[in-house]
Image 1 (spheres, rainbow, N blue to C red):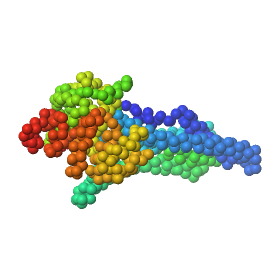
Image 2 (cartoon, rainbow, N blue to C red; image 1 turned 45 degrees about the horizontal axis):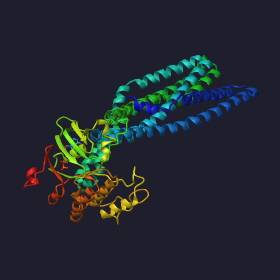
Image 3 (cartoon, rainbow, N blue to C red; image 1 turned 90 degrees about the vertical axis):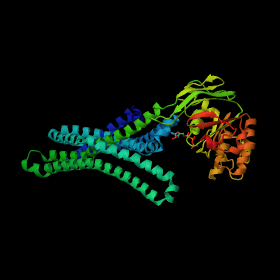
Image 4 (cartoon, rainbow, N blue to C red; image 1 turned 90 degrees about the horizontal axis):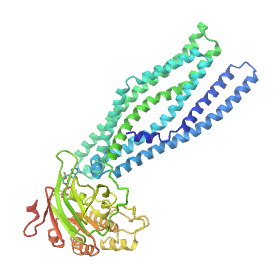
Length: 545
Ligand SMILES: Nc1ncnc2c1ncn2[C@@H]1O[C@H](COP(=O)(O)OP(=O)(O)OP(=O)(O)O)[C@@H](O)[C@H]1O
């Protein structure tokens, strides 16, 4: 799977590399003209003019190509971070819900926040380092012409430096991978701190212990990175020191032996000093590539997992008929994806349009799991769902069947902007806000709801308004009434549900509100993953659990 890699290099094209090579060659013009000018005889105006001209042309060419190159790599960096982020999030939203739930938010957050950033920075480094590599090669060729023995010495230095970098590379990469793994731990613990901020503030011991965990992961990240980078810095220092020592030998010792002329020594020193920075940058490539491999592996792994879990979507328009008459489950099962995990089924039931269906049952009996299967968020692992007698196909879930449902789950999200519903009818919205007794708190605006900063019960009511605005034939409410005050609870069961039924909706409600059980048309009881008819005569919920 090379998708992240492809994304990374999508913009590094031949033109950019060509500009990089031209830029490298122009630096030679600068070095050459300086070299000639410095060695010109006193008052040799012709030579000075000529080298001055070469210098001017090379100077303009160098800065023009550098300007293009730097700007392009800047765009490249931002393009990479944007593309990697969008590709991962798009893959996540297209993956099956159960797989996304299994991945957990911290894995996705750390990839988006850390790896996408590393990739984009490295991307820039790679381009710059490759440019510097061109410069090194060009300068060595120049040195070859001016002083072959100097070119040989510099080449040997370069090869030795490269070998030093390769030495212990696998140990360094392992440390980087450990650091990256600690990064996941850090994001996981950070997620717990932020989502449980109330609970942490309320219990100092828990807060301290959790912070210790965060701190331990942060230390692991730092220690591994420092260890790995120190190895690279050591190599850099040895390389730099060797280059300066070679210069010192040529400047201070070689003259005693008279093997090189002053001009040759000057050429050698100028070129070696000129090479220090490109040498340094091109050696960075090893560090960059080691980091790149670690982040690429993480991103590819995440991308592959989400791609493998991609929901099948039919090419043809599977938008199903909104006037469904019957919905039935036939020997349907669902099992979470791990050994010994909870499973429900076989589930068999049939409901007609415009019915109100209640589902009751104890905690953990599988009610929410059933609703997720009912709404197509989880496809049955065995058995079928039939609409008007026709078996649903896998590819019909995502863009077809699921779109028949509007839902309010226990942890439902209310979106402040009207995403995907730009033409929201203001009058209809006001009607439902009034019915939900929210009209004085929440207003219609061009952008969406004026606020979502509400109490738990108010937010539940707003979630119902949001679901009703979607105007789907099936409405699914998971313990909707649990947070409602007695007055609104009464309104919900005795006014809203009959109104919704009259408006043609089929409504599924998970409820434990015994006083209102008579309101429904069908009532089921969930127990240990099995769905039974609820026997109203004397069957209390407590007995059923
Ligand atoms: N994402 C998940 N992965 C694995 N197992 C899960 C997952 N979500 C729920 N379960 C398991 O499925 C079982 C049923 O959970 P479910 O949420 O469907 O119960 P419920 O009847 O809605 O309970 P409650 O009344 O407490 O909301 C539980 O034992 C739970 O551990």
